[in-house]
Length: 248
Image (cartoon, rainbow, N blue to C red; front, side):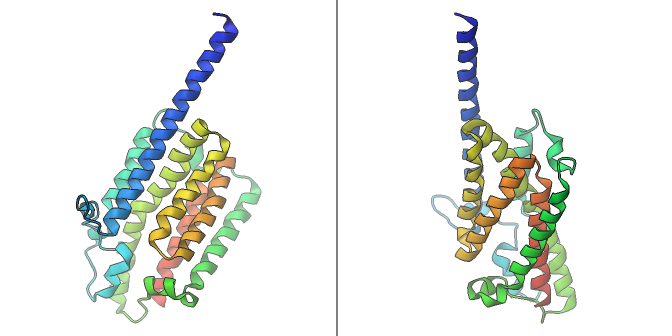
C-alpha cells in the first residue's frame, strides 16, 4: 500500500468515526428532549414519563395558580440538569475547549450584537399581552402578595439555572461541535430545527421565535466558536420574562 493510499484510508476511517460520533450525539440530544417533553406533558404510555419531572412545580407556570409558593427545592429540574448539562459535559471532557466560554474570541462588534439581541428579546417579551396564546401561558402575578412573588422569583431563578446552562451547553457546544465535525459545516442548522421542534409544545409563535433565534445564536456560536454570547442573550430573555410575570 502506498503512502497516498494509506493516508486516504485513514481519512475515510476518521470520517466514518466522526459521523458515528455525530449520530450518537444527535440521538442522545433527541432522546433527552423527547423524554423531557413526554414528562412535562404527563404522557403515561408506555411508561409514566412524569417520573422524570415529579419534583418540578414550575411546568407551564402552574405554581401561579396557587396562593402558596412551592418550596424552592421543588423548582429545581434535576432531569434537565443531569441530561442537558452533566452528561454532555462528561461526553465533552476529551479536548475540552475552554475558549468557548470566555470573551477572548469576541470582536468589538459582538458587544453591539449582544445589546441588540437583549433589546430585541425584551421588546418581544413586552409584546406578550398582544398575543392571547402567549398571554394565557405567561399570566402575571402583579396582584399577588409581595412575599409570594418574591418566593416565586427565587424559585424561578433556581429553575432557570437548572436548565438554561445545560440547554446552551448541550445545543451550542456539545451537539454543534459533534454534528459539524461529523456531518459537515452546514449541519449547524440541526440545532435551530431541534429548538423549533422542542418549542412546539408551546404556542406556535413562540416556537417560530425560538427557531429563528436559534438560527442567529447557533450561527454566531459556529463562527466564533463561543457559547457565552448565546447564553447571555438567552438569559436576558428569561430574566425579562420573569420580570414581566412579576409586575404585570
